[in-house]
Image (tube, rainbow, N blue to C red; front, side):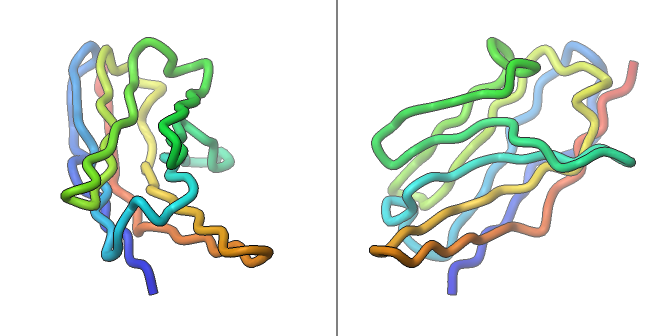
Length: 119
């Protein structure tokens, strides 16, 4: 059973930076893709950034150029560096990992970490 634990959230002023961490209980190299999602109050959960095992990255248009997803295989941790934060980035941020073994796909989620950006 894979466990994901996010950390690094908090309160920051607009224009500031935060780095979120997602520590996995297993080797992240076994994950086909790891993603960060966020959910603001009253809104649907949305994809923020993704990183495949092969190193391909993708970002939501709203965060391109400001957020960067990286990983440290030795620490089994994925990071989300968030710069130039805006009040609209306020949300609970969730880490997600997908493992595909043949036809079987397993989806894992962390508990979330709150990010609040004040204007």
